[in-house]
Length: 290
Image (cartoon, rainbow, N blue to C red; front, side):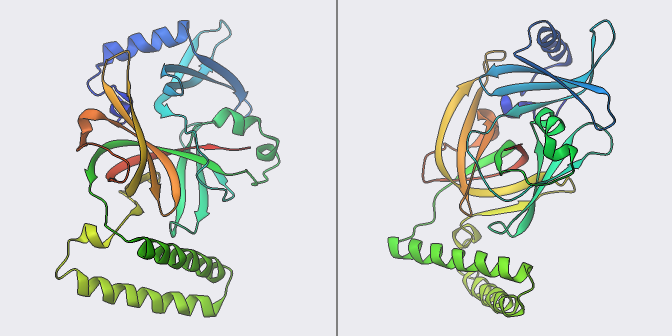
């Protein structure tokens, strides 16, 4: 069973129920698409929605009689908002016809790696065929296995504006340093030393979550898993009509990057509200804009 089925409302589903959903998807797919894989063989994708834009994706191949043989499946939530315009590099997984996207997002300070949802569009893209990496940005969504709601950090309007200007300046320096600007690199080094000294001083009397407003960092050994802390912009609750489990769809802002998070109501500690913060671990998916 997939570890993140719980994120879209299949928290306690058994194998027999999963097989029944698979059979229903084969007979009554909500979406079916076919393309040639990286080795030139026909590759098929079948999607079964539990609500519009969210459900289960089954990938595999069809034999000469039209029977579908599944290679693997995964839960998904199609993101609605463009999260970054950074160019994307597409890398194939070694053991199956799946792809990871990689982009250098300076606002996060790390290479952003995510699981690509729209593989069929990638396989059919002329850009992919010619090995040119010039895709037009990514819409991101994370499936969370656990999470909790935190109170916001109180900041005045002046402090908010000062922090915004500081972040913009830092992102500019990071971009310059990546292009080989030695002066920008030295300024970033001094800035990091000041940050370290400031945190060391404040941690003696303050809780770490009042010092760290948000973060986005890799979690574990799998490259597309992250631990995040972000501000809740908006949220809504939906019901999985197969299991009647409630799922929260939370729009987060983290380092000025907007992305959605899906989490089972029973895996979330606290009540989400705009202005509060979400802290949790998630599997990052993305839809590449061609």
